[in-house]
Length: 473
Image (cartoon, rainbow, N blue to C red; front, side, top):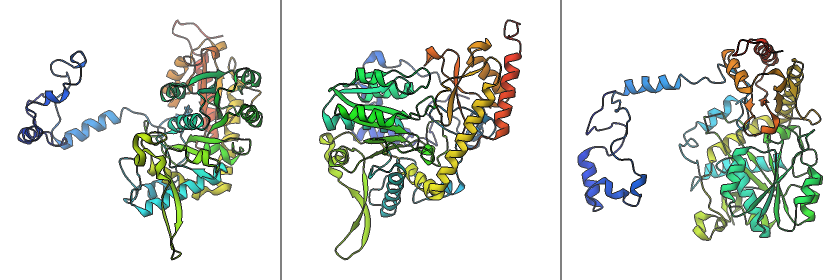
């Protein structure tokens, strides 16, 4: 691509030199560089960036971008066994049809402002999520599940004024890093996991909890797919010290698993992506926050509530409520900065839940349970391969260990790509005590033959010659 000076970019507004000069004159600035005086000189790049010149032809630009995009391999082309936070669930066509409508579709957060139709749609979302979680109070979806988890922890701090949070040892490292940043004023303690089940070590929890503990936070299922069966006991321990019990849950699991509300969860959070939302290279995420119907919880939600109202004429409408909690209303005096909400994905999740209903959610959950357990059985029969946490029930994800094969997860995954298979998430860097282990994921989109083909491919890879020319025994 040819470099050009003084180019007028057709896809960048106000790039005409005359317009830029007028804009600078209007604000009393001679050169653009003056706008960056607050940035220290040692942080500024000297000279021009070494980047290609612009592609001015729309058709050439389209070909260029498509060439980059076509280097990606999607789950439509490859069989996927990768999860670890973003999942290849089936998206019913009606979800795309409704969230693509002009009254809902937006490039930003999809908020309501004075849009009463959207107010009603988000009210339906909060009602459906409330029914799914068996919770009375649900806020508008946050930016993602990570933000929802962190806001839930901060809510606990605001409720009891304590600055200690207990989190499980088995947890997504990205979530840990978010907690360290978002809750940097709090002390974080990790609770050990039972080596056989992957569930929380209750003795370690009892040793570490104290009168300083704001909340006990768990994930169920946890990051490695293990179902936490001790929820009621964890709740009792947390509440005996006056701590809140915060549970992050995979909503797609609630067709077959009890909601945390049943075993004592005070604040429930989670990630919406499984509910009718496509994987999107980091987009398509939304966070759930729900709680009991008590003032101490309600007034500590930073995100919007949507309620049904009746006027003196008996007419019904939908609107935001208790806005004084939010930074939209009270700015720096609010309980917490609101940040970006994701109304579009909230509406999409509402469509998905409306479409499936309780029976549909049960069938999806059962389908995932059967298929993931079948995958554990088939992979566990391969020589040298071990399924970890066998004493625990799992949902959707499970850990496969390759230590006895002489192969690394990285090597196996590289070879699986040649078979058009996305292998499991490599745990060897974040969970070093698990050795060469991978987190495999199975959803309702995974077919029986996909699982069997995966097992055959892994067997071939393990029997193949390694990079040194030897053979794995």
